[in-house]
Length: 414
Image 1: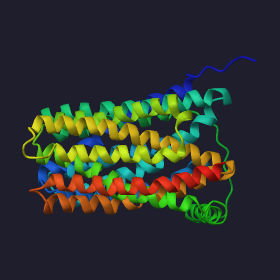
Image 2: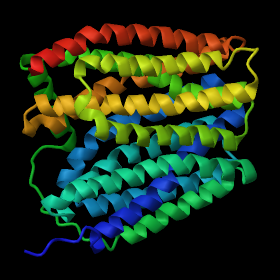
Image 3: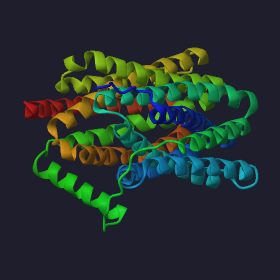
């Protein structure tokens, strides 16, 4: 039997479309929040807008998987890329005319909604295009493209924004999404329409109910894990998402390119964490997962030290950038560990549903945390280091509490 080539026409077009689309997405996600922060100078508004934009991504990520199973995946990608290009074009036309805050909220909510629905279609297209022995390699290629976009996008976005402002980024992003959409029209993804009398919302709710019943009756030890993840997202992940741009731009008064480098360090940390997770993953015991969370917490502590008045701004900046890399590497390793645990302890026909429920519940706390930290950075503008130190202390407490939870979970796994 002839071995299938990985980069055959349709998969190659998907990869190229991902490269173009994800790059446009990465520089846009970097530039729009930065533009808001530069224009208003308000951490409260920045935190509130970030929180609002995050909510639809959580919701539409649940719908995305269902949509990918019931609609032609190529059509999903084409429509969403054209839709993204249209949203950016409209934003370009009105961003100097209408008030910045409401149009930024609407724009980011739409973009994050599309992102939540888009990626499941890409992931679901891989098994449809590749034979079984090539699926893992195909996933690796897509994940590498995603990681490189998150690494290079903010750096290039910082250079463009610092040199010419927002307009070139809007034009480049629009061109990226239009090019990706046109290219995806020529992809052929095998598709068989499924009949269903239920609406998509009913299907999603039924899946979530089934997952909830399974966790309640068969895996009650998952519940404290979900609570820990939600608390960690509320306290630690939120302060990183909101705090890093505020610390670099508002407090340390660094350049847009500098922020791009720091955001790029997050992408590089994710890449390093993924590689380390693959190399030493088998030696990572679940009961020691709390150490990874504690390491993330310590990174926030070091960032807070970098904001002390006696620390030179440039030194503080590099402390924040280095700790961004470390925190993302550790959190990626923890995510790999948690995903593996769920996959090992869950029946195969429920894995996707259980993962969707866990991530949705865990991420629901993030918008509240982002809004809270935006307000705190406003109120405590004279002592911003106290916010980071406080987040670090609480996160360390959550990490230490999680030790016994992970120990019980590993014991249950036998």
